[in-house]
Amino acid sequence: AWLRDPSPFLLCRDAASDAAGGGAAGARCSALREADVAVSSDNMSPGEDLRIGAAYAAGGTLNTGLLFVRPTAAGTAFATRWHETVSSPPPGKRFAPPGCCTSDQQVFGRMVRVGGGYPGLAPPAGAPTGGRLLRADGNLTLGSLPLALFMNGHSYFVQRAHERLGVAPFAVHATYTLDTHEGGAKAQRFREAGLWRADPTPPQGERFLAYNFSEPPEVAARRAEYARRGLSAANVDVHLSALEAYVAELRDALALARSLGRTLLLPRWTCWCDRMWAGSDDIFRFGCMYPGAQDGNFVPFPCPMDHILSPAAWAKAGVGHRDAAFLDTLAERGVRPVEVLLLPRAQHRALLARPRVALLDALPLGTSDGEAAKLLAHLRAAPLLRLQHARGLLCALDAPQPFNDLAATLLRAPAWCSRCSQPCEEQLAPWLPAERVRAARPAPAEQHAVCFQPPLPAPLRSDGCAGRS
Image 1: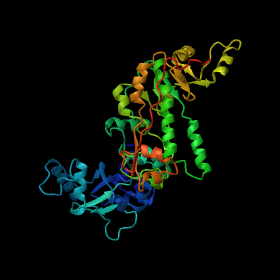
Image 2: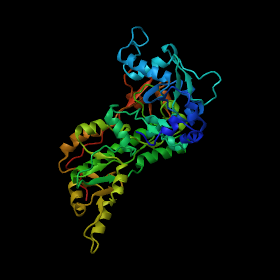
Image 3: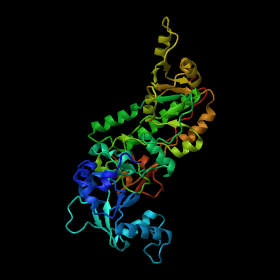
Image 4: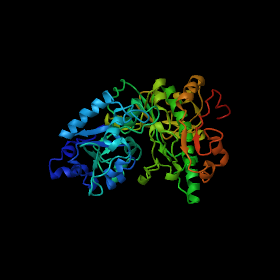
C-alpha cells in the first residue's frame, strides 16, 4: 500500500528532495541517486538499516515486492535479463535447486549477488557508513531502499517502527503475515491498520456489536507478580495467559452478537510476545521479540488478528466481523455507539426496581443470550452497541450446539512455537513449570523446541445459568 507519493524521493532531482525521506542521514535520496536498481528488504530492524545502510540489507533477504528500476543502460539491461532468466532459466547450478528458484525474487537474489553466492554484496570501497549502494554482480549498482520508508509487514504492523523513529513511510508491503500467508491474510493486516478500502459498503441497516479491550484480571495479576520479582512482563507466561483470556471473552461477545443479529467488531488486543512464522528460532533470548527486531523494544504491542485467531477460518466459515479500525469508519459516518453497561445481577435488579426505570442500557453479568436479547430489545434499531468488556457475560445459550460447533473452529488459537537455545525446561524456568514445558514438546524426545496450544473456551450450555438469580 502506498501511503504517500514516492516520486520526489525516487527521482531525487534537487537538494530539497533529500528532505522527502524525513532528513535522517540513512534516508536521503541522494544516497540512492547512482543506483540502477533499488530494492526493499526483509530485514527486521529499520533503526539498524538507517544507521548501517546498505551493508545491513546485504546480509538479509532482498524483497522484490518493492523495487525501483532506473532507466539507465545497466538498469534496463538487468530488467531484460531478469525477465529472461525467470522465463527460461539457463542451464547450470546457479539457478537450479536446491535453494533456487521458485520465484522471481529468488532469481533476483542469485543474479545480483556476486557469483550467485551469499552474501555476494558489499558497499563500494570508501563508501560512508549509512550509504545505500552495493556492488552487485555484473555492471550493476544496486541500491537498498531505506527500510524505514519502504517498510515490510513486521516493521509496520507489529513493531510500528515508523512511530518510534518519527518517519512517514512511503509504502508498506504486507510481508510477515501469519495464518495462510495468502491474499486474505495480507488484506486483513491492511484492514486492521485502516489502510484497506476495497471491502464492499456494509448493507443498509447492518448493525454492530463492539466491546472494549480491557486487561483481563488474570493477566494483570501475572504482570504484577513479575514486577514484584523484578522481571519483565514480556514473557511467554503472560502472553499465553492473555491468549487464553482473550479467546474466552471473545466466546461470549461472539455468541451475543450472533444472537442479536449483529456483526461483531473485534477489539485491539495486546500481545506480550511476538509470534514467528514457525518455531524456527529462539525468541526467548530476544525478550519475546522476533529475532533481529529486538532493538525496537516494541513489546507489548497491539496484536494483529492472526496472532490470536485464524482469519482464514473465519472467512471459510462465512462469519463476518469487523476490526477495531472500523469504529473510525463508523464515526466518520456519524455513527456513535450506545454504551451498554455490565453490572452484577443484584445491582442490575436493584436499578430496574427503582420507580420510573423500565429500561436500562445495561446487562447483568452471567446472563443468557435470550435474556440479553429481551433486555436490549429497546436498542434493536441502534446501529452500534458497545460493551465495556465481555468477561463473564454469558452463562448459557438457548440453543448452544450450533454455536459451540462454530466456536470449535473460530476460537481455536494458533499454536505458539519457538526453539530453545538450551533445554526448554531450563530456559523457560523463570516463567513456566517444567511439566507444562514438557507437555508442549512437539515430540517426546525434543528438548529444544516448544509448541503451546492455547485451550478452547468451555462450550456454553443451555442450563449453565441454573442456580443463579
